[in-house]
Length: 224
Ligand SMILES: C[S@@+](CC[C@H](N)C(=O)[O-])C[C@H]1O[C@@H](n2cnc3c(N)ncnc32)[C@H](O)[C@@H]1O
Image (cartoon, rainbow, N blue to C red):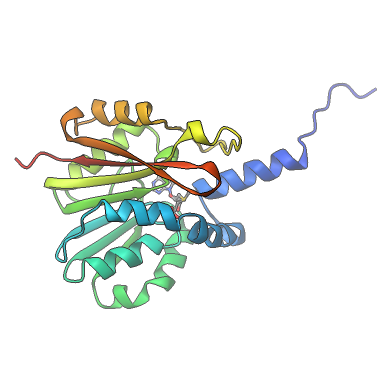
């Protein structure tokens, strides 16, 4: 007699696989996910980069750049500046490198593997930090926010995009790598509890297709 063997359904396995690939893309599946990200995340990037107020000589950092669409926007706008990119996925670093080779060769862009929770940059070394669709995966969240604060120069700004969890309850896409989910209130309270503090934070809602709602937060480090 066989007792209590539990089978995972193919639907669950696929769900977990896709969710984990968004968090840490790797191999052939990661390359397919990269194509999906380029389409799905066009509008979130549009909204987030618009709020970065990029200056031509800015030193910028994008964390969790994925296939590298945001990096292209940043290098086009900060034409006399420098752009750094950090992502923990080797697959994404190699896809984004191929897509941005000209900027790398010109010395304007540098990409590296690394984590949000321990950024491989000196303190006060960048004027702006961009983090699109990555905050769900950082652990612990307060350490990642603290790292963003550390690397920002006084007066520097952090722009975050996350999809509002309360508007995606019909599509639960949490995998084992999802550590944080956000609503306007939870995003505001995480930022308020960080070094950025309440005074420097604004959060805007942006509507996306199919009833999704995005949240774009801007947090500014005090000028002195
Ligand atoms: C959902 S993808 C988003 C990619 C891109 N920003 C976009 O919106 O299209 C998340 C990216 O963040 C990276 N990532 C996740 N957690 C990370 C962490 N703790 N540190 C660095 N990179 C991380 C993943 O490797 C992946 O490339």
